Image (cartoon, rainbow, N blue to C red; front, side, top):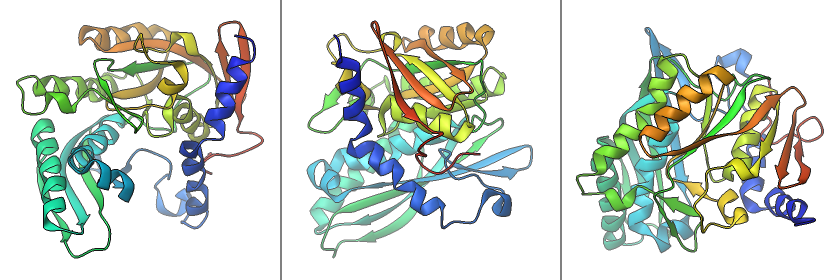
Amino acid sequence: MTGALASLLHTLRTGSALAAKQDIAAVTAILPQASETGFRPGDDCAAIPDGEGYLLLASEGFQDSFVRAMPWFAGYCGVMVNVSDITAMGGRPVAVVDALWSETSETAATIMTGLRDGARTYHVPVAGGHTSMRSTHNSLSVAILGRARRLLTSFDARPGEVLIAAIDLRGRWHDPHPFWDASSALCGTDDDARLRGDLELLPSIAEDGLSKAAKDISMAGLLGTALMLAECSGIGMSITLDHIPRPDDAPMLRWLSAFPSYGYLLTASAENAKTIMDRFHRRDIGAAVIGVCNDTRRLEVTWGDEKETFWDLGQKTLMGCAP
């Protein structure tokens, strides 16, 4: 496998998924600084203090090519991925609203059916939105409101903590897109309650004080998401690829490029890690310690007997969201 790790990391480092995350830096440079607003760009949601907890606010947009190719699934994802963002911060969803542009009423109906089915599966109401059926393109954005009692954030990972990956491996690919879907097959079945129980693990972990930092694995893939977490927390990480929960038939490159419907990274003390993983394991969710946090600001990766630097945040930022 000599040179395999370097080649794999080069492919991920130069891919479109991480390029999209680097685009965020141009936006954060324009926005007011956290010291002016009290909000920290780079997290999965905006966390707004509200009584003894927080309101969580987030949104997702979907490209025309995806909406055109998979209109029902795009609508379903409008709920699914937003719920994942709320959960990643230790919250529970309250409601979603959507903004839809479509070329025809037929296309709009398919997208909205997916949105409705996602809302029913996750028990999150669609509270309103905006619709245009006289557009020259098909696109969708969905915003979500949630609540959290205690937060999991992108800014609270600390050197000395371990890095845990928790991923539902009971899924399937949505070719040609990099989506690992362990959710939509349960839509309309008695098993959809399982999804909500699985999501409840994250807020319970936050409320029990077992972890303070987490992110859901995004389109940036597992290493890209780890890099985002490291940048926001001002730390480095050492990750062992062989320890990552992975389906038996998923090649490493494809798995590291995957956007799982249920996939999270959390950091915790070594003594809390077993308790956290046991909670995932009891619900048949793959969970393992895949790395260690340190103070190097580098993301180092080991695969077999090879070790390489994936990214040095001291030399090159990603989203521009470092402390």
